[in-house]
Length: 275
Image 1: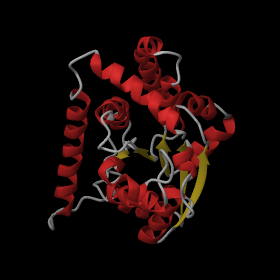
Image 2 (image 1 turned 30 degrees about the vertical axis):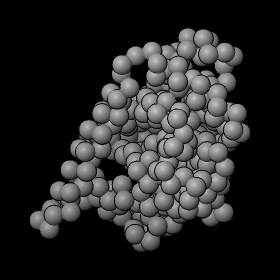
Image 3 (image 1 turned 90 degrees about the vertical axis):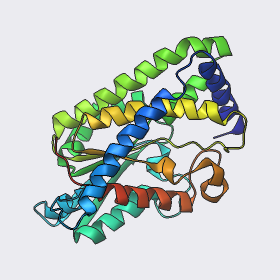
Image 4 (image 1 turned 90 degrees about the horizontal axis):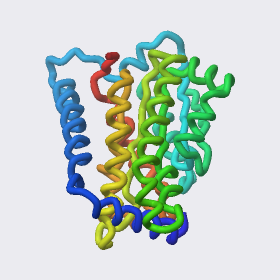
């Protein structure tokens, strides 16, 4: 992504942050959801626990293969990686941990928005892919923000922010609804959006606010569609260390993709929850 796109996004963020006193609320809600997941993980790590993890659930599925469908944008596609992206790295590890052949079907499309993905899933062929999947990983939403940031003028951007946010929420709910209609049992894994802006930049808090808004929608939508998980990729792709994991202005490099993959596997080690 070109630098001027980030500047447009930053301008929008500064406007959004300036209009209300609700800056910390989304982060508070996200932290509570993460804390609940951490508590479940801690309970599963206790010796007396007999809870099966998501990895264990995949291992116990009948058959010798795991069908893994990946949906979303260029991060799913693997942009910035020479190893097929985090999705390929995690998929290989899932094969190793389960003793099964994990068949990856990467349907990532560069530049895709949540609206694009929603339309994409209406295709009968895609519905069949969903129906056959045991694991579905999704990364979507970042391009919704970028396109919003490119609206002409700060006033127009401010006027449209609530509408675009509402559209993203509607689209994500519909995406999950389509998936659940076709496949009630597949494990859904959503990769949260991370902040690629350096933490030393004065506009970093503004971009953090925007991403928290989007991620809270994702956490709440995912929680309503069990069995499901969110990869807390922002916990490893930290802005203060961005030079170590960044490929261009937004995509992770090989190391960044590897870090997300490790987070995905760690997340899948949590206790399996069907409902």
